[in-house]
Length: 119
Image (cartoon, rainbow, N blue to C red; front, top):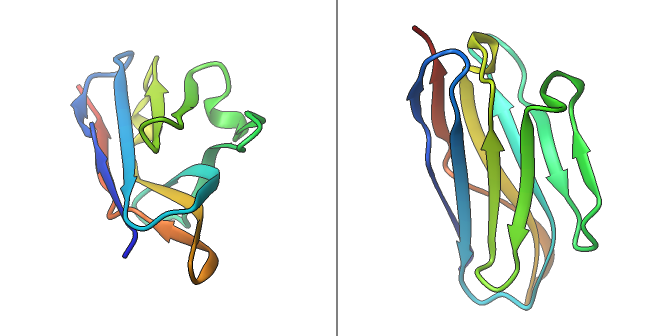
């Protein structure tokens, strides 16, 4: 059974910094793409950032220059460093990973962690 566990969310003032972590455990053969999605109140879930197994990065325009996604393959962990946070970054942040197990390649999701940017 594959499980993704996130940590690092919380309340931060505008301009502040947070670092999210997401570690995967279980009977894993390989991990391919890693993602951070977010869903703000009343809005659809959007892809905020992603990183491929080769290290290719993607950022949604609204976070470019402020967020940094990275991965540690030795720890099966993906990170999201968020700086210069704005109130509009308030959302539930979900990590996801494309993981190969004995059942093939599937996308697995974390439970979500709340990020609130407010003074």
